[in-house]
Image (cartoon, rainbow, N blue to C red; front, side, top):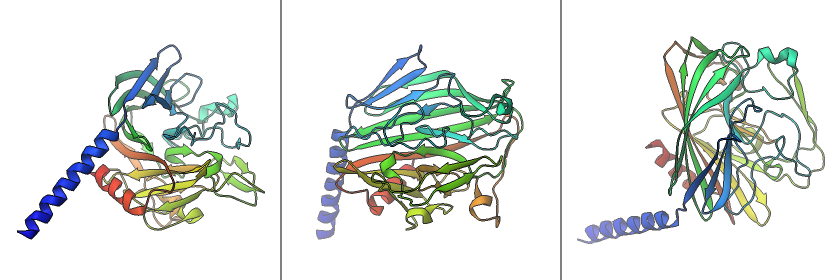
Length: 347
């Protein structure tokens, strides 16, 4: 009898918690501007992010990302200017999804900074249709895009579904992206991919010395080190790795956190068990690049193994990720993130 009472009490508690969580969920409103090729996302009446897909960008992005307390958690450059913001890697804009190698073209590193005589080595992702927008306690945005070369030939068709939700202290993005090959599509093992996010300066890990990073075409980018009064970030993965040690390791989730103003802001990316090569490798750099890349195995294992993906014409592959942005007196705990990952795995 006592066991039954306890079980009933637990059920009541869980129901109460679910009801409380539902009551806290805020209204999501999407505001379209076809002229500007932009869709603003508001949660609880406050700006959260904008889906940007103008022809001036080499890929569609969510920019900026704003925590529930109004703090911008993504770097401003290159679309805006904030004092002290680093200006390296101009292709790092907000939150994006692309890859360094598709049929010999680099989609990841393409930006306005690439000289015109080298643009034929790069690829573009052009959004041609917004398929759905829906308001509610979960806001939905679905779009179609083409991964193209300089001759405008379609290599891959992309269909992405965003689900946005939030509470007074948290914002969540669930992203589901399906890539369908329009020809034989080869994604050889590369370091730079797949889901990327460029962090605000405060969420960088402090570095005393300059850092140099070389891409697959030999282009070197220098990230300046030195005395940094803003950077105070740190990484933590589901496997207990911290700081720079997270880079090149696998994990179900990874979180970056740091003090921004009066509160601790944390951003977690959660992998999904149906994704290729689960759990993902983390391409998490101290200078502010936070990326999940399941296809960079050769680089991350120092050549011990590799992951090459090939789609025949008409074949498709799907990637699902959850991004959780939290602001409070402390970062999300490992138990909280494990529970979030378990819930996301059921979607």
